Image (cartoon, rainbow, N blue to C red; front, side, top):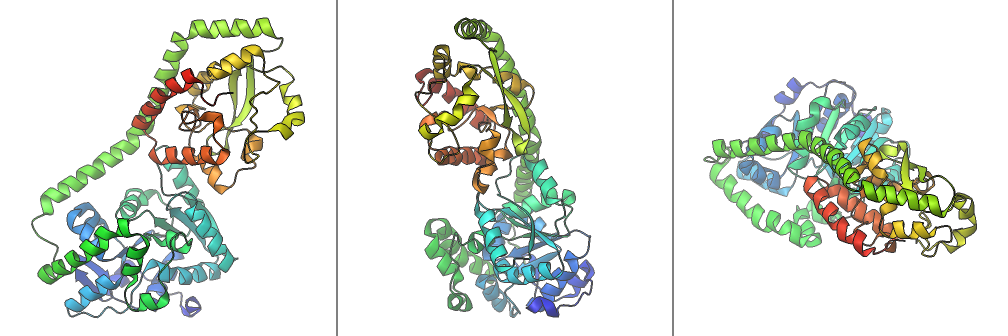
Length: 485
């Protein structure tokens, strides 16, 4: 293992500046060996001073010419590493020889060796839901002693950013961020001051390759410098613009401008990029507060307007069967925090005791949920209020208390959460809701896996516009009673 031969010399940022550099289209990156790069990283991971490592390839350099904020982020990197045959060819055009192709996929095995050797901890952040988990499993198969402090997908909305940062800051030594260019570099730059991690590294599509979601090019293809052609073959639609159009454009720009950034785009492009970044920061601050305001105003308004219906339901339940009018049940909320959810009672008072007898008649696929169309535990009034979702209205009180939102994944029972696999547990990243995407897409007619898929799809797109759409779609879903029983 190469990392065993690496000494413990502390490399500072000043040391990095003394290393040979190459500048292409206004972006300077180090031109050094793999061993020197690993010595740097080993030293930095053991040092509390925060440092950021990024990579630059032909696509990155193309993007940087149009996005001057991203260009500035690259300049601010403590270590910027060359990646790919396009950069290597550009160096040759500038009469420079690139000493090593230092891409994240080739560095990862050495980094894992290093982390195991020094008892350091790794956090995987990015990619689609489930990919980071699969990557963690692959890493643990090869390095059983590797400590992984946590994993999280890359769809991080303003509602969960504080919790994600808290997870990362619990003893992480190396954070790998895989959100794609330039989103990952901008995300790191925006949150670097709050990340208590010695080394943060933007790694692009590394998780997709290492989790084997996308197969990496065979070794002989990589040695020939044709990995880009392999990626184009694997993802032709997504990679066509990047490689078929982007690579020739990049090489023409290098031939024309060499080391200098393409002129004529500076001030306007920088202003536009800074404005986009400002809007993104404002949105991150404003969105959760606006959604909470919408929850409070919406819940209060519905309670007021429907108060006659609520009183009528209360009376009907009391007249039909003995027992409490409201049914309180412990549910699991955001990040696994339990709370008491309230409903109008729609079952006889011995419903929980009779559940075991009925488990064999469960009609829900997967064994996590219990659903039965002709459930004998439900009262006559209960069937009506369930069909029209009136039984859920007391949860508006949970919304006012902040335990729930108007829109979000439905809160699950503790026994259901205990059966969740890693993918299903991602539902707990959001505040549970009164309605959600699967509630307006079939409700109980959907399988558990379909419900999970829809909930995770919502988590990727959650926002005020999406919430308003789902609230409007809830009205016809309730009136038609599709999938409600």
